[in-house]
Each structure stands twice: as C-alpha cells, then as structure tokens.
Length: 443
Image (cartoon, rainbow, N blue to C red; front, top):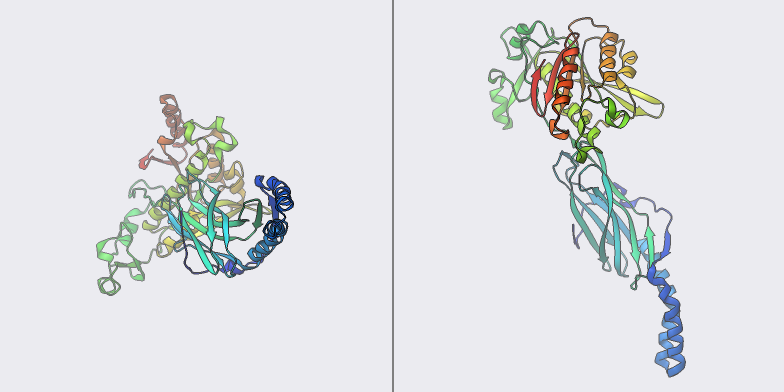
C-alpha cells in the first residue's frame, strides 16, 4: 500500500449519506485529568499571564476537538476507483481509495479500515492503514487484492477513524466506498470425443458442420475460439478488425444437453462419506477449491458439446429468501464469454444432496444429463442416478464428470483404489469422465 496527494475519479457512492457517528477514548485519555491538574498547579505556582494562558488552553482543548471532529464529519469524503473489476484467479486487482478534505483544518492522524484479500486469497478481511490529510488536499491509498478462488467479492473502504493530535480520542466516521469485483475460474478444456461422447451418437454429421462443410450455411460470425477450423475463418473481416473472425454454421441436428453443476459443500456437510482426505493446509477451503474445479469442468464440457453442434444449458442450485432455486442458463458459442462470466462466479449453495433437490425441479427438462461433481460419496452417486432417471430423455446415456486435484489430498493407495472402484460401479449406468489434476481420462 502507498499513499499520494492527488485526485482521482469518484465512485457513485462518494456522496452516500452518513451513518451514526461514535466517539471513544483511547488509552491515553486517562492522562487528560492529570494534565489539567498539572496545568492548574503550574498556573498557581508561577502566577504569570503565560501560565494562565496554558491552563486556559488545556481547559478549552475539548472544544477544539469538537470543532475538529465536526469538520471531519462535514468535509471528509471518500471514493474508490477499480479500473478492472474482473480478473481470473491469482490475478491482482488494483484499487485506489481516495480520502479528500475540503476544509482548512488538517487531520494529522487518520486510520482507514480497508477491505481487501487475506493472505490465502480466500475471503475479504479488514486492515487498518494510517495516513494524514492536509487542509484542502486529498490522500490516496492504493493497493492490490489477489484472490485465489472464483466468486464475487467486495473490496474498498469501510470506515474512517479520526484521532486528535494527542491520540486521546478516536472519532469513527462510517463512510464507505466499496466496489464489487468478480474473480473468474481458469479456462480449461476437455478433449473432444468423436466416437464415445455420450451426448452425440451421430457425430460424423456434426463434425462436418463444425468444420464448415459446403452442406451448411453460415448463420452468424463470431470471434475465433480455440479448436475452430481454419476453413471457417472470414479473412476479409479478420483483416479489417485485426482479430480472427470465423463463420458460425447452423447446427440444426444437435441434441439438448443439460449440464448440472454440483456446488454443494460436501466436506462441510459430511466429510466422513468422502473418498479422499484433504491435506491439513486445505481442510478449511477444500469445498471452495472443489467448487472451482466443478465450475471449470462444467464450462469445459459446455464448450465441448457446443463444438459437437449440441444445444447446451447450464444448471446449478442457488440460495434465495424462499429456498433453493435452480438456475438455467442457455449457452451458445457466440455468447460463451458472457456465460463464462455469469456462471463463473456462482457461489456454493448451503444445501445438502443438491442433485436430489434438483431432480423434481428438472423433471420436465428435455435432453441428456451431464453431471459434474467433485464428490464420490454414496449419497452423491445415488443422487446422480436419481437425477438422470428423472430426466425425460431416455437416450443417450447420462455422463458423470468427476473432477479432482490430487495435490489437495493426502496421498493414499487405499483411497485411490476406493475411488476407482466407485467410478467403475457408475460406469455400468453412465459414461464416466475423470478430470484429475488437469488431465482427462475416460472410464
């Protein structure tokens, strides 16, 4: 963190109404009665005009403090500037908090309570930053927030603490200048499968459409995405826009695919039922890390199915004031980046057995089910079977994508064998894709 005296762009909450104020004494305030007594003795012993002036000054000191604190409440303003409120995990987000003083009274001791990322990047924590504000000037507190987990976070200034010149009293100003930032997951991929994909049996026709066969007509144009054929590039538009533009071909024969994300905190609800034991340093954040893997795998699966020419809908459960609610987000290649941001910050939902909750809610939805989870607990497997059975589409077979980062767990051959056994048991009724620490294996 550093501070400078300059002006910056104000945020919309710069002129937000003030909250109730509070004045509290510090540990040094107990010395004030002693100072009054010492001043009285000093005046009585010397009996000089200067000594009496000193005593009067000590007596009027609370009045000066009242003027200073009233000026702070009337003339101090705060704002925040976040140039780029969206970033990926572990990418720093720069922010700047500006404290401006529009009166001729200085404030030599000011502390700002600022919300920023903690050491692990798992949540926002308040820190105190000291500064001084000169008359008719501004003070800038700038820094970086670095989050290691996807989601939406609120950073910025919560309140100000103004002290007198002797730091005997602390005046709390509930000013706030907050900004919401969005941390997106990593962009990963699941290798395309032209022969064994559960979601598209007629793959040869869709592969031709994906590569822009002469039997199809372009219905739109879009930015180049990884895996697009060079034959589909629109060279004239690419030259004008200075970026690769491709022709998007109609995909009228694709299937409906419902990708369901398991955003349950399994280790928080029932850690004994899970197949793997987290390493001690990841025990508190294992559910957040797993939810990141689930979201990244869902988006990778959506991109894979869209390239097959299928129609994809992402589904996840969220918390509302009236209870759990399923979110359905149709995804298209032309708007994949927007869907990436919308779904990329979906939080963990505080509900157990989410697949069982979703099964009756999604009973009327058509299409093949792809269930993405980081849990192989028996109840999770049973819930997946229930969810697949509740879907109105009987073919093709459902797919289970199991994602795990082995670096988060204690290395155990017994747990490896148990995991393989559970995956083998599922493969009889569904296609299984295991995404393990960035590598993909099909069962």
